[in-house]
Length: 233
Image (cartoon, rainbow, N blue to C red; front, side, top):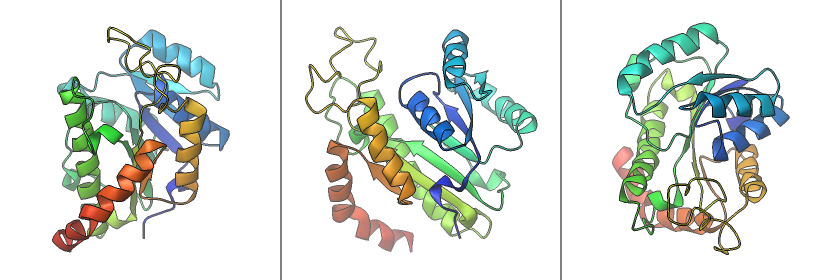
């Protein structure tokens, strides 16, 4: 049986230097968890680790550099064998062959998708929309595969689907603040978003929406959930 979502002790958080990854790291530390953050920019990571305190360590990794991932994984596991939770928060993820993994008796994987992975309304961001849709579907398939595996059934797989959150995600846009509350009334600030996430974790939910994405997630599963379960049976 898979563990409760918050049963883990040490989380490795990709994209942990800022935004949602940093906010989740702060919350987990407040719950007494250990956190290791990963990102592309050492200066940002060092500042975030200092802000987090709790002897938080970090690794510099560009998840877009696929060839560097196996060596990084081995190094992280060797140096921190206590890791028992992976939070995939980096915007672009790559598929993994779960048959190559040995699973702990109990572990947790938390994947960050997006409202845009359900309804791609940000027309100017087709790549982002597609990667988040991939994360949504991959998380569903991963959860199903693991639940049908004798060792994998001890792994809890959770999806968090944020709506628009007031982060610096739009920093490369013409208007980098168009996801802030003063310009988008549907935006959640970080405390509001983390309230939804924290409650979802505590309630042991498999899929967690926030703000506008709560209704979208519910409607999606109402429309397609039964068909998926039939296909996965």
